[in-house]
Image (cartoon, rainbow, N blue to C red; front, side, top):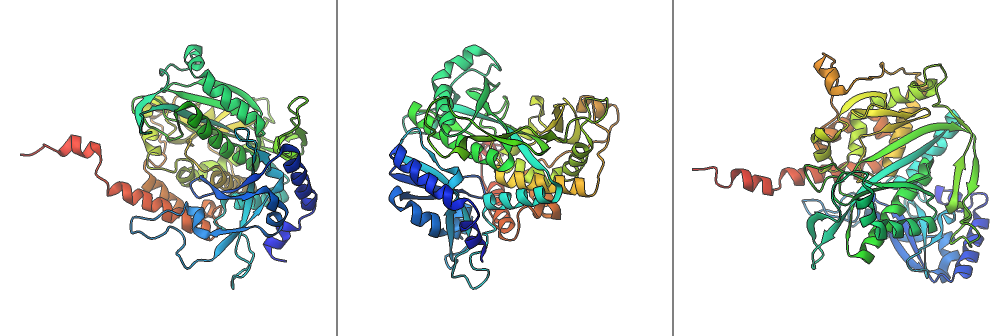
Length: 489
């Protein structure tokens, strides 16, 4: 069978398809968004009436390959990734991701996996390698089969709520004042974040905490960690929720890394650990009927955390944790192209007065390093911002951990000093790439991280991001005008 046929006929899927029909009828859903994730993390796809659920679940829908690159043109007016002669992908829904949209209960949402067209002469019905979500699932399953381990991830997505003018453009101001952890400023955004939490809970996110960060209008809301794929789905869902709440409150939900200079940027610290075993827990939402299939509201919990210390030193991870750190440290320059994936990302890394994680080092609770052991049993990859694609990054982290474990790598000693003070004392510490162009060069040299973007995925990513870098280099900005407009005669 082709990859597509195997996916449609996988054990238990037919039962899940029927469960979705039951939910459609129970909840009165009449329309469904079938969505996947583009190279930049955008949500793309199609809408189809719910009457056609069973047929779409079996046959899928077709969409141009270029949708995986947002169907955008490069600076030479060529479609990025694929030309007009390319075939159309087939999107097959994953019924375990079906849930109702809380802001319009007539509408449901389901993620899809993308395949090559059935009529392709080469690899018909094969996995579409430019489908970053499909790739992550494959790598996650391969990693678990090889090592018996599951990567669990928790993200800390900072973002800003900005005010806007009557024409919809930003005023250049955040809604609140830049006072970190101040409840008064948090309270000023209460109608906004309470609506986000309401919608998030209804779409399967187990919200656990939140605060006002130290930029204007900047909030961070967190949910329970889970396996790397489900967490990526929840981060994508969270972004959709924020966009909807912004429409309702006449604000802009800004995930751009650094819209303001002189204040902190929006990072998205990625906490990770590798586990053996565990069980699935369903968040039943009290006595309410679940507005989707149980799997959307499920979390994996328990098991053995292999990152926990195995010596008396509670600041050092266990053997597998240290091997994973070594793997990630080796590949930090290439990983930066995925964790800091836009030109604007590097405004954050240059503004070092705000604990910018620009150094390729690690330590316990050391926020000046690119990698921080944030608590016994997990570590935090800090050079990640809120514009990143979590599916691409998740796949790359799996590849880096795989190399560290397979080769039994050992990291250098952890740094306990402020990295800036350590440098003054003579320590030689390498910086991470400080521009998108440099990060793309480091990625091009790193075959391990590139393997997380197989075949067409890397082609599409490099095309898209290299074009972004070249557009920036060729653009005249306000800085150019302010600096050079009247410098002569």
